[in-house]
Image (cartoon, rainbow, N blue to C red; front, side, top):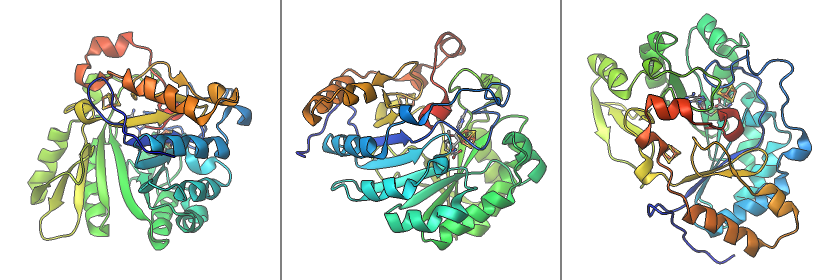
Amino acid sequence: MEKSIIKDKLNRPLRDLRISVIDRCNFRCQYCMPAETFGPDFAFLPKSELLSYEEIERLAKIFVSLGVEKIRLTGGEPLLRKDLPILVKKLSEIEGLTDIGLTSNGVLLPQHAKSLKDAGLKRVNVSLDSLNDELFGQINGRNVRTKPVLDGIEAARKAGLGVKINMVVKKGLNDTEILPMAEFCKNEGLQLRYIEYMDVGSTNGWRMDDVVTKKEIYNLLKEKYDLEPVDPDYYGEVAKRYHYKDTNVDVGFITSVSESFCSSCTRSRLSANGQLFTCLFNGNGHDIRDFMRNGVSDEDIINRVTEIWNGRDDRYSDERTAETHRNRKKIEMSYIGG
Ligand code: SAM
Ligand code: SF4
Ligand code: SF4
């Protein structure tokens, strides 16, 4: 497919694609899929509504032809989708795609890390919000201890995957874990990324007061460690990184709330049911799945995606206020995967 670069209204190119492969999850993290809303009767998508692997492969090729270089698979919990390595293999064969990553809660990695690596996966971000078993069990809403996640991290490293750790920090919930997590990851040689708690969706009861900012976390770390800023690796790198002096370990911050980065946001997201979102905080996506299922040509899909991206002017985090948060309908995180 011929390659062209498309830009949005604010001159941002389309570079990254996140694909949610499933909306289900084996966890009920308080800040993402609170158990009160996502209870036993919650209607998740039936398989027929999910994009098939063939459909994802076709769309991935089209997105790569429009400038996408990196794809990250996410969910819900992506490892709950059957035969995920088959999809990874298909994606790894796409010319021009330089990076395939996965975001996972880690518990199924001992079973799947090796086959994912063999299929062409490069890296995995594992979410871990606490090292304290009891607290972690409360946060994940399923009383899962830390061991299954730590085993998953170990399995991923053994398989030769690059591993980063994601920790969402919520005030009064797990801010006591900021330093223990730093110490653990530093000793293990793992890059930890602290993620500011975000107002995604409308079920997690987000309040600005619950956010622990990068500055607060950085000041805590600074008391204990010698940190040096690291230049971004590439345009649009989301994490602000620091280096622990005299080690080869970095620590990062995703400052979506306190220092927004919309001006260099090159990311698009495909939900599990094939809706295209140009911002994490959109209410509705643009339908791609049914359009594609109507038998249109690749050219038609290219034109549709180009039109959507060309019309994009999202900068929600730049403009966020308590008002915009309250008054806006937003898609749930489990649909588009962060
Ligand atoms: N289940 C996988 C996992 O937890 O890694 C993948 C999907 S999860 C939605 C993707 C990422 O979003 C995770 O790192 C998770 O911690 C993060 N996340 C979920 N809800 C969030 C929120 N309200 N604010 C900030 N990050 C959030
Ligand atoms: Fe599941 Fe990930 Fe959301 Fe937790 S953050 S509920 S593991 S999708
Ligand atoms: Fe990108 Fe939207 Fe996040 Fe801004 S708020 S960085 S436009 S996803």
